[in-house]
Length: 130
Image (cartoon, rainbow, N blue to C red):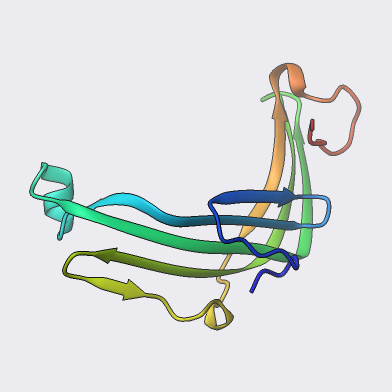
């Protein structure tokens, strides 16, 4: 899928905030399967599992510029659409999400923020320091 035209078969992240596009990918990321929430917070039994995912943020609709001299930060935030695919697998269980084309964005926002010594002196938006 990939709204940026890029596709990935490896773990990576790709950001182009000026174009309002970001991607994150993971392939066979090792995770513990704790079976239940209670097991996960109480140190209960686990078994090895793997998770894979692809997430795309794209198509900005609103841009918000924030600057607060008193708190010492400036930010540029973009409301965007997003899509995700997700799968997880263990020895006895597998789950695969619906395809990313079926994703519905309720709320997604990407952006950049500057503070401290990186806070721009001039009025206006924060700019990423590449």
